[in-house]
Length: 158
Image 1 (cartoon, rainbow, N blue to C red):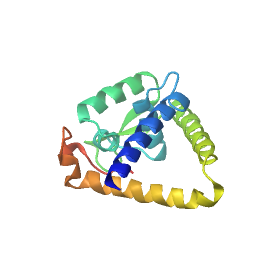
Image 2: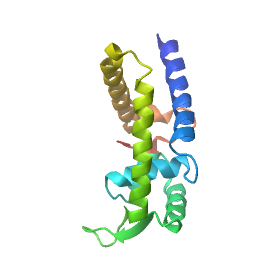
Image 3: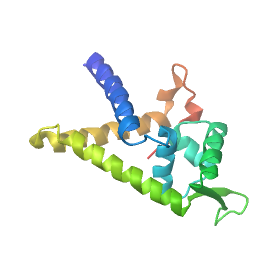
Image 4: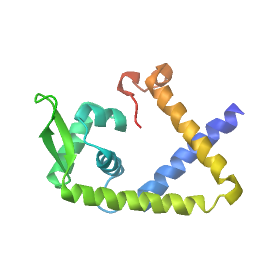
């Protein structure tokens, strides 16, 4: 069972990454920009919170944010509760782009779900939600401390 799970999770991750890159985050948007835009569409965030969400270092995220700001998608604004901090906010153009990406993501998910037998869809969705929760829990705990990962960079990404 463990080998099957390992093979399946690796395959799903790779296939989904390619599918996302080719159908959603294509054209003028990188996958990291796509993910950041969709995250910031939900609510503003600081650089460190966005870095945690992306699983990237603060410096790599700052470079990503700089590029997105140059494209006119985001702006840095003073945090409303702490003027020493900055929050990242989507511009009108950024909100529009994020919504386009979200619509593409929803369409991709709809098409993908069509390949699953209708009577199994609820179980698949429930299993995916359980897996997503387990991954989030793993990232918050020590399970990211093996291999080349730095668990101090891992945090909640939902």
